[in-house]
Image 1: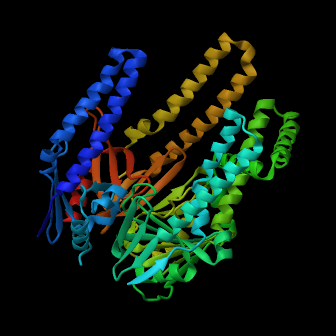
Image 2: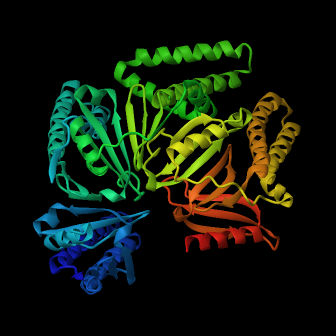
Amino acid sequence: MSKFRVPQKAIFLWQARIMAISAIFALLSGAIWVVFGLAAALFPVAASALLLLFAAALPKRLSYFRCQVTKDEIHVTSALLKIKERTIPLGSIQFLEITQTPLERLLDLSTITIYLAGARTRLYTLSHQEAEQLLRLLKGE
Amino acid sequence: MDKIRAHPVTVFYLFLRYIFAYLIPALGIIVSRDSIKQIAWWNISLFASTLIVTIIKWRSIKVTLHRNCICVASGIFIRSEKIIPFPKITSIDLDTPPLLKLTGSISLRIETNARRGKKASLSLRLYKEDAYKITNAILGGKKSEPISQFQTEHNRLTLMLISSTNAAAGFLFAYSVFSTGGTILGRQFQQNILTTLEGAALYASKILPPALSVIGVLLLFGWIVSFIKSFSRYYKFTVLRKKDHLVVISGLITLRESILFVNSINSVEFRQTLLLRLLNQYSVYLQCAGYGKQKGERAILIPAANYDKCINALKELLPEFEVAPVQISPPKRAKFRYISKPFSLITYTLSLTFALFSRYPRLFPALILFSLSLLAVFLWQFIISLISFQTSGAGKGKSSLTISYHTSFCLRRLHIPIDKVHQTALISRGSGNICDFEVFVNSDKKTCHKIRGLDKRDAKKLIRSLVKARE
C-alpha cells in the first residue's frame, strides 16, 4: 500500500494562486470605490478578504488530503471545503492524465486527473516524482 | 516501447484553431481606421507567430506505445500526458478525408467510456503505418479474418436516410458552407446561390402562399443537402465481424473505418420511424461509447431491413446479443397516458386558432398556415403514440433485458445485456396501479429509457428477476 500527501511546495503554490486572485479583487474594489463609491466596493472587498482567509486556512485543509493505492482500489480523502472520502476501484479507471503548468514545472510538481466512466477525479498537486510513482501504480506496473 | 510522432499535417489543423485571431486586425480597421498596408503587416506578423506556435505545438506531441497502454504527451506551456490502458478502449475511428489522403496520413480517434466531451477521447493525425501500428497493438497484435459480413444495398440506405434526414440540420450546414464559401470565394458565389434560391421561391409563390413557399423551398433545399451529406458518409456501408470486434467501413469522399469492441457495446436498438413502419422496415443502431459521437454521425449497424433480415444479420454479427421478446405490456387503462400529451397539444392548437380567428378575422390565411403546420406535427406524434401503446413493453431473457418505447417521432426497441443495466426505477403518480419504468444504461448519448404506463406488479416482478439474474 502506498500513501501520498500534498507537498509543502504545492501548498505554497495554491496559496500564491489564491492570494493573486485576492489581490485582483482588492484592485478591482479600489477602482469601483473611486468610480461608484464605497458601498459598491463592499462586495469585492468581502470577496478579497474571504479569499485571504481561505489562503490562510489552506495548509490545514490540505493536510487532510490523503491518497492511498491498494491492490485493487485507490482511496482519496480531500477536505478543501467539506471532507470527502472516495474509493475508486482500479478496474473502473478509464484513463489517466498528468498535467504540468509552467509554475508547477518550476517547482517540480504535477497534477493527476483520473477519468472514470462518466466522472472525473482530480488529485491535488503532488511532487512530480510522487506523481510518476502513483501513475506507475495506477498503470499496474 | 515504440515512439511515434504526429504527422506534419497536424500543423494545418492546429493552425485552423487560431483562425479567429485574424479578426483582430479586421477590428483594427473599424476602431482605429489604420491603413490597409498597416493591417497587412499585422496579418503577416500574426500569421508568422501563429505558424511558429503551431509548429512547436506539433513538435511537442509525442506518442509512446507501451505493452498495455498508449501515452500521449502534448502542450507547450501546460504540459499534459494522457495514459489510456488498452482494455479500456471502447472504439477506434480511422478517418481519411481527401487532405489526409493526399498527404499519406490518417486521423485516429480513440474512445473510452469516460464521457466528458472532447477531452474524453484522443484524436491524432498520424502517418498511415503508425496509425495501423497503434490499432494492431490495441487489437492484440493478431490479424484476424472476418467471421461474417454485412453489406447494405443502396436502396436500403436511401430508405433509412429518407426517413431520418433532418431538413433543418441540412439547411444550417448549407448556410454555414455558403457563408464560409462566400468569404473565401467572394460575394459573387454567395449571391449566385442566394439568387437561385430566391428564384425557386418566387416560382413556387405563384402556386402557394408566399411565406409557405419560401419555408418549403428552404426546407426542401436543407433536406437535399443533409441527404447528400449523409449518403456520402454512409456510401458502401459494410460491417465485418472479427474475433472480438466489429469493423464498420463506409464513406465516399472521406473513408471511415470504425472498430468497436463487442464487450463495449452497451445495447442494440431496433428503431422505426413512421415511414419505416409503413414499409415494415427497421433500422438497427448500436450504443457503444464513441461510435456515432461525432457531429452528423449515426451509430448504425443495419440501415434498413425487415425484422427477419435484421435478426439474421444480428445473429451473424453479434451472436452474443440475445433478442428477448416483450413479456409485459401496458394495460388498456394506460392508453390515455400515451395519447394524452399529443391529444392535449392538438386541442390547445385548435382552441388557440379559433380564439385568435374570432379576435383577428383578417389573419385567417396566416392562422390556417400556422395551425396546420403545428397540427401536422402533433398528429404525427399522436399516431406514433397510438402505435407505441400497442408495441411498448419490457421483457427479460437469459442474459438480456428488452425494452420497447417511443420518443417524439420514433419507435424504439432496445436489447441490453443485464450487466450493462446500471439502474432501474419505478415512477408512479397517484395511488393507481400504473407506473413508468425507467432503465439507465452506460452510454455517451441517451442514458435513461422510459416505458410509460406499465402494471406496477408486473414491473416489480421484472425488477426482481433482473436482480436475481445479476446475482
